[in-house]
Structures are given as structure tokens and as C-alpha cells.
Length: 242
Image 1 (cartoon, one colour):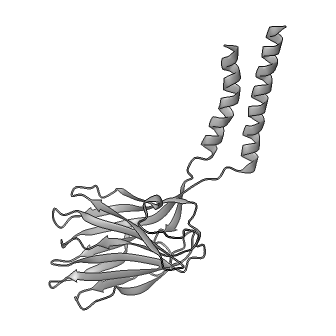
Image 2: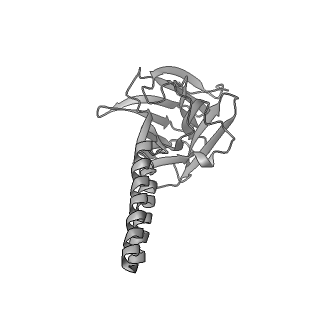
Image 3: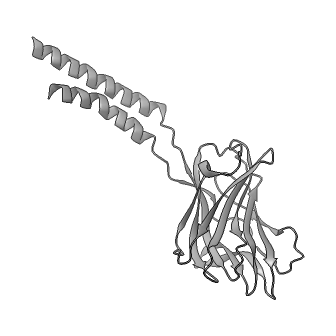
């Protein structure tokens, strides 16, 4: 029993230090509530590159400017749109494919005031609606590009029936390119062509989950507790031997 008390005195601070390093809360990259709203529509196969329109500053923790894009790959009389829309007082990004239209739509964010994403564990996009035009999976991709033009991304495949309020999480450990996370220049989020028309989705925010570094003062407190616990346990053992 005495040895158990001594062990508790040493282990509790270690547990506390581990808890102190738990993930922090989300940090906003873009909640789409700042800057000028905009719409971009692509309605012709002649669009070899994404059609874009400036849509204002993000207002997020990393700063930067957003640009909407839409790029049609299959066209039959309608349009693919990327739009900032007001839904019940909440500005959201909506990506909509018309009848007979398939392609890629979404948002670029660049000109960051803080390019260092090295402390980011994952980037999340909060869905608010999701509509499947057919049985095919909806493909959603997040990409980062660094100052050396190296691009890496994560693609999620959303099966038919995925709830419209799903939180999409893109782990930066799964990036398919060796991006320098200390020098991120561009973030791209959007849908990919999947051979199916009339797929629609909207998101209310793009955020990060960051690593939390314990404050020096917190580490000092846990260290003192550990030393105190071991000293007290040692003195008790010495008294019991006398």
C-alpha cells in the first residue's frame, strides 16, 4: 500500500502533463461571414481553367483572401455554381451542379498573413446540406500548396446517404504531397468531378484543429507536484522503517 501511494505521487503529474497537451479548440480559417459575397458560374466546356471571382477577405485567424471557382467537365444545358449565400442569417459556401452538369467547384484561399500551418493536426469543413444527384459518391478534396509550388491534398469520398450536417475532417498527416507546412501559400477546398450531375453541398466554415503546447508555468506546477509527491512518499517509507 505504501508503494502504491508513492506511485500515485509520481504518476498523477505525468497524467496531468499529458492532459495539458490535449488538442485545442477549433481555429477559424474562414467562416464566410467577412468580405463581399460573390457567385461564379461555369456553363461551358470551353472553361479549360477554373472561372474565378474575388469575394473578399476571409477574416479568419490566418488571414487571406478567398476566390470562388467553378470548372465544368460535363455540360448539358445548365451550370455549375459556387456561391456565397445567406441561409437564415449565416453566410455559407454553396456548390451546386445543374441538370446534366458535372465538374469541380469551391474556394481558393491565398495571401495568408500567417503561413505557418505546422501546428495544425487537421482541417475541418462543417457541412450544412448535402444532395446526391445519383448513387455515386460525392468527392470532396482539400489541398495545400507551399511557397515552392508543392501541392498535397486529402480526398474524402462521401457515400450516398451521408448526413448533411457531417463534419468533414482532413488529416494533414494524410496529405499526398510533401507540403512545407511552415510556408502554406494556398488552400483549396471543393468538390471533384465524379461522373454524376446535380450533386450539391454547402458548408458554413473551414476551421483547424491545432496542437496545444503546454505553457511553461503549467509544466512547472506539474513538475513541482511530481517532486513533492516523490519526496513525501520517500519520507513516509523512512519513518515506517524506524
